[in-house]
Image 1: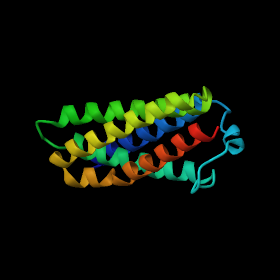
Image 2: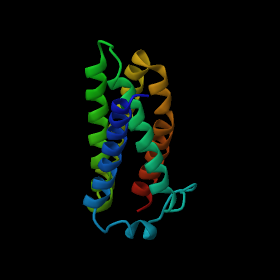
Image 3: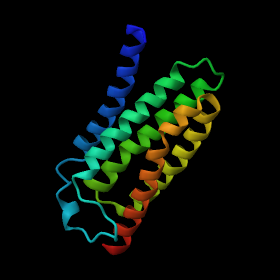
Image 4: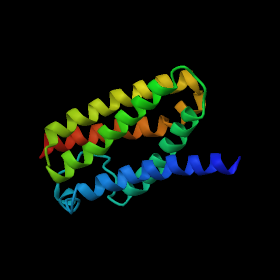
Length: 155
């Protein structure tokens, strides 16, 4: 891969990772309260979340780069959907952790879920591999939706 392409790929990955980091930063020192919540069955340990998110953000960045480098007619539309879902993803942590608005966070995560599905569909039309890279993200958000709804109902 050419140096320019490697640089662009790294920009996509780092930018996506920074969105997650900034969201966590803006959520404030609110993560400690999560330990005190009553959680639904199958809730993973807290250390798993940052590990998973680091992996998922990297995969998202790679997939967006794959779309960016395509010459497909729907490329711009796909990248707008990507950016929109990334913004909604960014907002979820703030709504859930900083403001502790569990009901609203359910609405945000279900919106995110719909956007991820739309993103995967359009990515698949452009580059099927880019869509496949987002399948772990889709599965994680389905699981996170279960956790969020469970926390809403139990707390």
